[in-house]
Image (cartoon, rainbow, N blue to C red; front, side):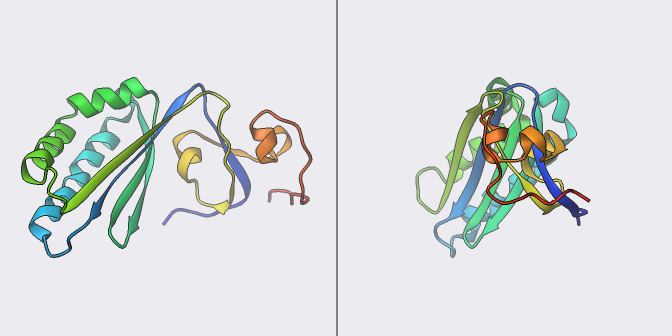
Amino acid sequence: MSKVIPGRYTAHMEGSFVVFVIGFRINKWWALHKWLPVMNAMPPMLQELYRNKEELGFMDGTYHFSGRGLTLVQYWRSFEHLEHYARHGANHLKAWRDFNRKVGTGGVVGIFHETYLVQEGQYECVYNNMPRFGLAKAGDHVPAIGHRETASRRLGRENEPAVPTPPNP
């Protein structure tokens, strides 16, 4: 388990980046033979990404299970890196072809993705008493003080904290 870091922190990213949300949803539980292969296709893709992070432009990701499926939030250096992996990543291409051939539009299992292009300085986040997580794990994990103390300040605006911020340990 990741070590909890006491205090308030935020993330710092150099340049623009991409947030990619992808996942699947089980629509018919009894069709195990259709959705289980979709679920089992994820680990090889993730292993490929983590083994080749720098080369592929993949920075990090988080994984969230729900009652009907899995959602991944991924951070990429650029849209071009993401698209190149989608079109040329061996494990992704195999999973994509298999899904289209075996599941297609039958409705048994759904897949989705959302892509967000984030320009430099057009994001904000805070992590209070958390392990290094999300964007702060993909980028730099820095104290949320001074010009990083409030959401508005993290977005380059000016304001004062509504509630006094306790000092980091």
